[in-house]
Length: 257
Image 1: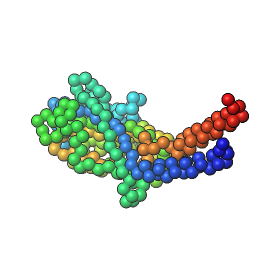
Image 2 (image 1 turned 90 degrees about the vertical axis):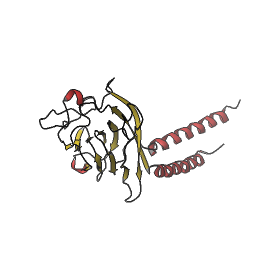
Image 3 (image 1 turned 30 degrees about the vertical axis):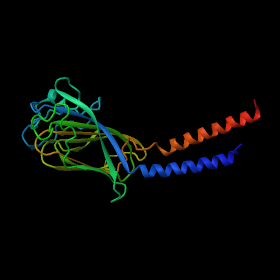
Image 4 (image 1 turned 45 degrees about the vertical axis):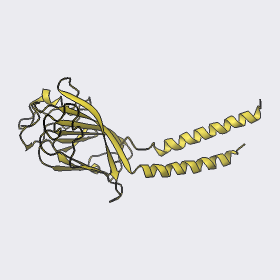
């Protein structure tokens, strides 16, 4: 029978090996969100090209969706009813599917996760289809995640068209409108967050006009879901399983059949 000290040493080696694997696997973060496809006849698509900030309110809605601001001077939208369809499933108006992107830590510099696609057409030939065009240009994309705040974290997005990022349910980046590539960035140290605390992260994107689609993320935030379980969870599970096995063997030795 394996002695407790030997068993725990073996478990320690296993835990360290899994921690090493965890660090290696953390080189990527995969985020899954929802894409909604629209016909180009929707009043908010194929609109005039114009930067259009202030479309959404500064606080995320109770349902986790952007709240239409309804401000005067937002010519690329046609009102709350139509805007509310952007990030909600509406029969006969849009079709949806899940879609994942993978952010890579390229190591240059280390700890920065990035995803860049200058030809971001994830639903070509799908849902409503391309509508006679080379690509399917009329869709929205939303991602909901969480993260643990650590000082020094940043998030940067570059692309077209609309992009809103909410951190802790508060608007952090506003790139609203139908426009060429624009860049927005936020230093999380400026948001009054508490180190070690977990916060919500919500991203809302819209591609509303022909004929380009760019989508680029660069961030030092370890957005969830992580590619591997938390090390503490791994270690706790192994230890509990190992000690359970040791106790079972001990009981069997004390009471042989």
